[in-house]
Length: 284
Image (cartoon, rainbow, N blue to C red; front, top):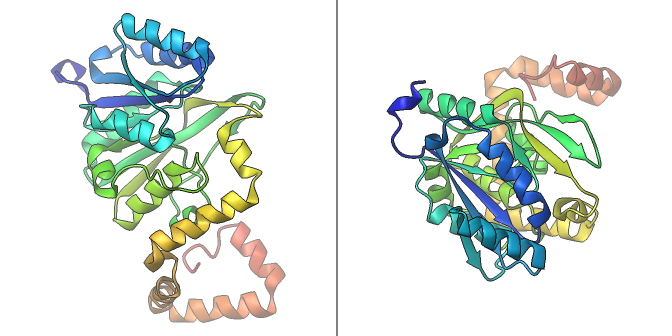
């Protein structure tokens, strides 16, 4: 890609920050490591932080020339929406204030989206650091998997029109911290396509007291999130969608589909092993 021909930011990096001032410099340092500054803009949203350290740091960043929005606490969804609404980039890249970008994420994301008009979302692997150190590999897009749980992190590069078409991040999700789950589902229901890059593209800080870890421990809120998604998107979670999906698979391979049912009913052990090896992928 010839970066010299780019005159306005292609990517808007959106960083909500609520009482995370001790981490924001790590996030910004990772962004500043990107050589081609003209490719992106950075917008930080102070979502009504109550921590004195955070407020002092963000005020100083604003004095230094960073684009910082100061607002009353409205939650993660509206912090992202408000940041995106004043951004100018063709592509959006949300970044949590306690995480870090790898410079290649910007370049690889731009290349995929510029050269593949049918693709709307680009996501990759995360290197965990902090309380855990390992690589998280979400794998390729699978709607059935996404219907059950969110395995695609918010840190993905996507087209602005996706945000516009879905109405942005839904502030009404009962359990806060999974607003990205709804927007990914909503986008897939509208036909937007996802592209997975099997490389580490960002660093994810694992904290024992993080919002998402606290939510994962709360079964009531988790169930409320699923119920909310079913109510908001009844067609895709309802029986009529399941019927349609089954009929599509049956019409594609009637003999194979019947064989699958026989295998699952009378030979469940063998069925499970074949699923694990990916030998039944085209039927299920």
